[in-house]
Image 1 (tube, one colour):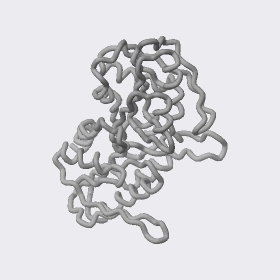
Image 2: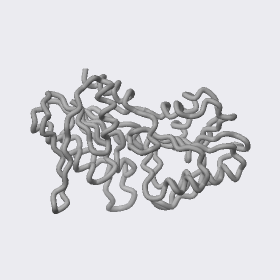
Image 3: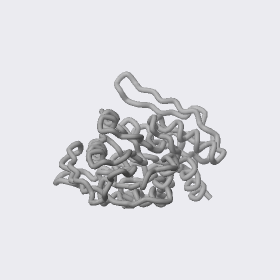
Image 4: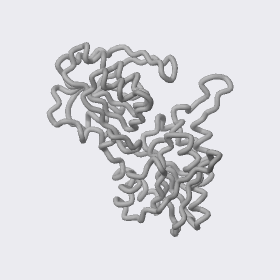
Length: 287
């Protein structure tokens, strides 16, 4: 049975259809003191496939509860799909005394999961933090699908050198265009400084590609630079459209043409479903 987390109900339903599995009824509740409760009162299967984006602390607690709940209900195999893994960017101790939060979360999940499926984690190396088998799904190429067919001399840009593989994947899937990146210096979680790339954006359609758009600071700066440089239209494509705080307003004010994201995080821009890719991964690890 497919067991949806509260933040992944649409994706879980799409996955259930894709692999022809029943969708479990899940109850999400909160006690008066603020503690959460995730329950599966009608679960009845040997295998549970939990689909839970961990985009908040509550979502993490909920995932751990769902893993325990299906075990309590008789599941002998638990496959945990984490479409977006929160805390994955904290993959090392950045200062003395800091935790490796990605490792802490992975270890917690490992206590209740036999296998884990991740979609474009911020760093692939975090798979080593889990105790069991981990499959990584790359959904970046799918971001090319909703882009207009008639992009004018397209330029695919990543906000930094570390994400250029994503831009190359989208460009290859689109079938034509050039690839480049911005130089980015991160001063804090919200303070980011970028400098334009050498690529000439004049009279070109530009697609900014990244794994995550969170506060929108980096991408909105990039959009402003590109529009100042004479770009024709600027699009943003990301796997995980967190779009927290006033990110959407920043991007609109900067002059973004369109934002394209997947349903790893369910937002109004999540027009690309990762369900087919996740289905293939789940079927591979459960055979």
